[in-house]
Length: 134
Picture 1 (spheres, rainbow, N blue to C red):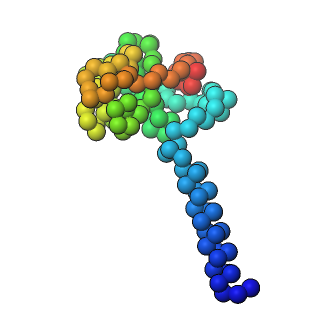
Picture 2: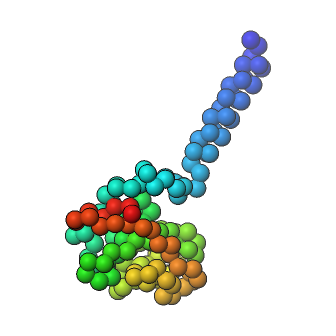
Picture 3: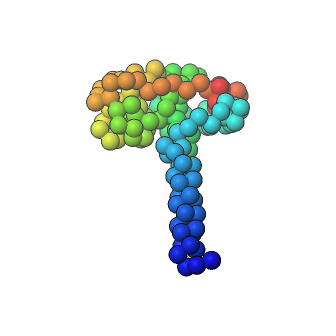
């Protein structure tokens, strides 16, 4: 095999590998993992979520809140304004640190912008003291 042909083959293989790696990255892992894979996976314990507060579950792209004692809600942690991850729950609002959008912790609605769309809800279930995908 000549030097030119060998370089061509190596370059093509490298380009194919890069394309495969980029395709695998997609949009940063926000793809749907399928309900069978998610169902039953423990996200948090009820004691981890304070009444009137919440917790960001970064690895799952969720924020779980407890607006009232024993009432748990979950929403996407991706801000609907610019796609930043929300940072936490403060004073009854889910807060995005990028542009200070605030979302209601009980229903995900916008309390203050610049976001104009609510955070999408995510079904969860509480069994005993475990919170998992619903």
